[in-house]
Each structure stands twice: as C-alpha cells, then as structure tokens.
Length: 492
Image 1 (spheres, rainbow, N blue to C red):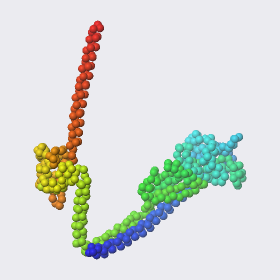
Image 2: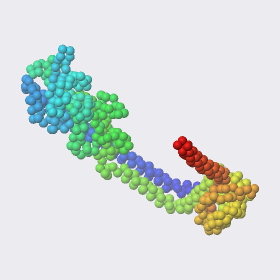
Image 3: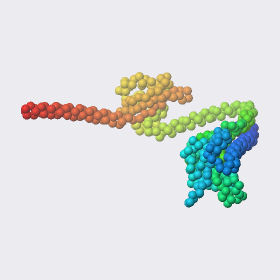
Image 4: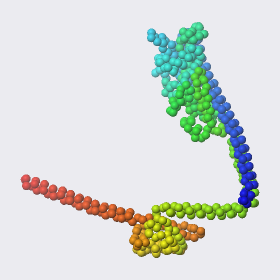
C-alpha cells in the first residue's frame, strides 16, 4: 500500500506528460508530412508540365517541317536535308534521333507508307524504303494523326537506330490546296507524314539536368499505360535511377502516381521522393524535438517527486528483485542439471561435494545423500590418476586454488562397486555468495575409448597384412623374372 501511495502522484504526472508529448508529436508530424506531401506532388506536377512543354516544342518543329511541304509543290531529298540542317533539329532538340519523311504510295494490292527521306541520311541508309504500315504500332499512330490532322505521339517503341526504348511523334502532310475538313477528305489528300523518333533516356535526362530547386531531388519512372505492367517491366520507358521501386520501398519514400495523355497516348508517371521532401532542417526535426523535450520534462518532474518519497522503497525493491533473480537462476540451474545426461556436481572451497545430480548418481552408483559433504578426491578419483594428474588434482583439493580452477581432463574414476571408468571431466570456478565453488561436468567415455582402441588394433593388423601382401607380390615378380631368364638361356 505504501508503494502505491508513493508512486501514484509521480506516475500520474508522468503518464499525463507522455500523453501530451505523444499528442503534440503526432500533431506536428502529421502537419509536416502533409506539407512535404504537398511539396512533393506540386513539384511532380511541375516536372510533368515541363515534359509536356518540351514535347510541344518538338511538335512545333514538326509543324515547321510540314510548312516546308506546304510551301513547295515537290520537296526533293536535297531540299529536305538542307531544311533539316538549317533547323538543326537533331542537335537543338535533345533526344531527337532522326527525322523521316514517310511517303504514301499505292500498289495494285495495297497502300504502303515507306520512308523516303531520312535526316541525317548517312545514319539512316538502312531504314530507307522501310514500309511503316507493316508495323502495327506505327501504322495505327500515323492513321490517327491523318484522321485528326494533328501531331500524335506513339507508345513505347524500340528505336531503329540504337535499339533503345523511346517514342516518336508524327504529323500528316497533305497535298497543297486539297480540302481536309473531314477524315475522308484528309485520307484522299494525304501524301505522307513527317516522323521523328525520340530517345527517351536522352530527352528526359536533359529535362532532369536543367531542373531547378527541389525538382532535382525527385526520382521517377515513366511507363506506357497502354501496355500491361509485367515483372520484367517491359512497359518501362524511363527510370531516373535503376531499381527505383525497390529502393523506394526499402527507404520509405513517398510515391505519387498519375496518368497523363500526351498527344493522344496515355503515360503513367510514377514519382518518388524522401518523406521529408522540401522541408527545412528545423521543420524535419520539430516533432522529435517536441517529443524529446516533453518526455524529458515529464521524466524529470516525475523522477524528482518520486526520489523524495521513495528512496526506501527503491532499496527494498532492489533487494527483493535481486533475491528473486538469484532464486530463479538457482531453480533454472537445478532444472537443467536434473534432466542432463552428463554428471554434474559442485564442490566448495574445502573440495566437499555440495551438489550431485541424478546423472551422477547413475554413473557412480552413489546417491545424493551418500556423497553430500564428502571429499571428491577420496570418494571417486582412482589412485593411479591421483599420481598422473597430481598437478591438476591439487587445484581442487580445496582452498584458494578453487577460485582459479578452469580445466578439462580425462581420468579414471571409481564407482561405488570399486569398478573404474574413464571420464571426460570439465571443472570451472564460480562464485556464490562471495565464496568460491567449482562446477564439474563429466561424461563416461569408457566405451568410446574401448572402441578407439579396437579400431587402432584393427588398423595395425590391416597395415601388417598389407605389408605382407606387398612383399609376396614383389617376390613373385622377382621369381617370374628369373624363370623367364632361364627359359631364354635354355632356348639359345
């Protein structure tokens, strides 16, 4: 009852202090994380706008090429090359791999869309005259562009020039002066397309390179939303860091997913950022500071009150706890020793037996009652090993040597019926209530030693037999040589 009265007020103050500290910790933590999340999503949206803006610029370049065809009745290869060089589209637009003019042509059986001009020409000789209508992805995109009379973006494709993932944008080219008010008229007036493949890695890496502020701390990947996501990420167009999703999961990053339609094709943007994205140093640590300060104040106040009223109770509790721990340890030791198959005993400073387990009773035939208080040496150690292990045995004859005892030996011991057995004995010093004791653990190895001796004898016999057999073989070989030599001489 006194204990509860002593602890009631400090405990109540401590609980109230902890509760208040935890409440304010989560209050600030929640608000700060909401701010970080808002910063993160705003910055991700800003970067998506940057990507959209860059694609619009690239689309504008295609409108410029379309203007070349609108201004000239016939555009030949040289004129196409000169215009592209003047526009400097490959160098001025990072990621643009090439620019193609795809001409619509009609055979007797089918309509074809073949690459007629390519810039730069020397890089694209291998793709000239390729029929893009045979490629379902490219054909569907170009048809959509022709039907709608606008720039269209493809899904993820493998680029002809470097086999890397990318996408392309295309714009239809119509015959000058023809009506193109509906899909049917556009298809009739269509003469081809201007198409530019874009290397996704170069295009997006350039946007990251030119990022400002916190945008450079964003990690993101882009996937083709029209394709099913698979384990091998076959729909992955771009990843700003390798194994991004695994790293994000391990480091507790925030994730933001959003699907956007860019020039007629859906893309899935997946952004990751640290949970403290956009926060200042003080903002990041404010919840922890509040919590630590509150806990310290609660603990200090409670401890101060408790120390004035419970010094005696603390001392008593410590003594009770120590006694309980000692009793528990003793009970555990006795439980283990009781069920152990090895013999376990304990001797005090006078080398008298103070503990003797059931396994020791079975090994030596002495009951616990018969050995308690008896000298270990006079009871079970054989005389021949008293001399052989005289130095070691002196260590546990009693006295201060017990305190430094730590040895393992094999020796003969005497059972109650005066028969001898070989044992492996381990002795270790320990201190109980400020007095030295030694704990011994022994195992009967008589049978093991006998088996080892039998094995040694059999090995000796086998070795002798091998030597005899080898000698016999050598003599037989020598005799055979002599006989062969004699036969040879007789024949002569």
